[in-house]
Length: 305
Figure 1 (tube, helix red, strand yellow):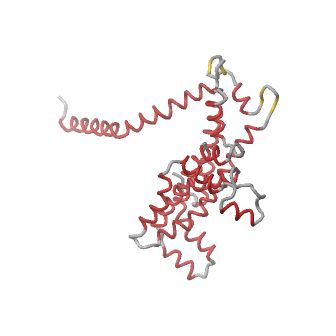
Figure 2 (spheres, rainbow, N blue to C red; figure 1 turned 45 degrees about the vertical axis):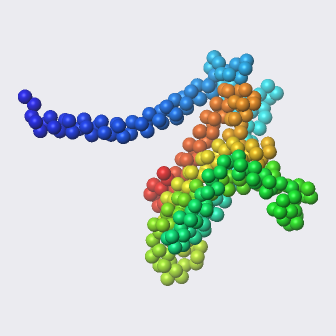
């Protein structure tokens, strides 16, 4: 005969277990269905052979990775490696500029009266509600020959006459900064909301210069927001397709454009899948590097999401 206390505790454990699975089950199923399974399918396609119409077929081979490294029918070409390097440094520059611009914006918003802060945040966020293609075309008009900004650059001697700032690497980086600025401002604003101003006053009382006071009193407190914003900016910027395609005009293509071109234009699915795998690996390596940097800057504490 079972003891009533043991029976009730068993039912309690089963109920808690069922509640846990009911809570996390939909999320786990979504991740498996839309992330894990497509990733394995992509991996399988990357190791297949290009068929007559570009589709993947058996047997398995490493030909797509050889082509990705630059070994083709006419010998070796560094074009794909240049694309990878261009993606890395354009993402790095854009992320750094976003950080530099976002810090004063987030601090300014956090110091405004409480009834004005939602409005200022809305002003920062509203542009992101517009489609990326529309925003890219807007920048194409702003940077085109004859525009006020282009004429200003010409008067300063940065451009030749009848030349525009678009298409160029400058236009691509500018588009990336404009597109991902809200993703850095919001996490930094949340960090500034929890800022302990006593540390700043203490640094000032000890006659610390403004730069030193910032890095000693402000930067450590906003590091979690900075790391979160860096992840939110760098990962999608690294795989961006629309902005380099429109604002780069074929001159500043990134790895996202390489992937899309293999699936849409060149009809080489294995090579496109291999490039996508390279993008995923590069993203994971970047996250590990960012994690280590965040841990060192945070004095050994985990600050990366």
